[in-house]
Image 1 (spheres, helix red, strand yellow):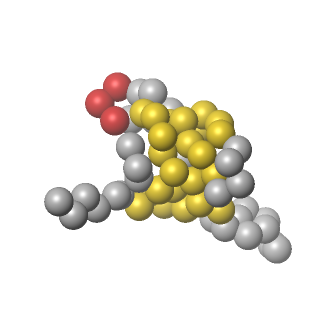
Image 2: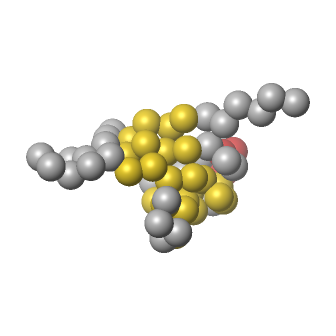
Length: 60
């Protein structure tokens, strides 16, 4: 949890979006994920080829 998804716009003019993974619903860290977008909207999704996973770096 805490990883970020960067979802690239799929059509011309559509901006990229980012979402934070707040819950992993699959086995062993696999999708689907419950995510929260910057505007507070939450949804369950499985990232597609237009999505980049940015892993959270824990600097403890």
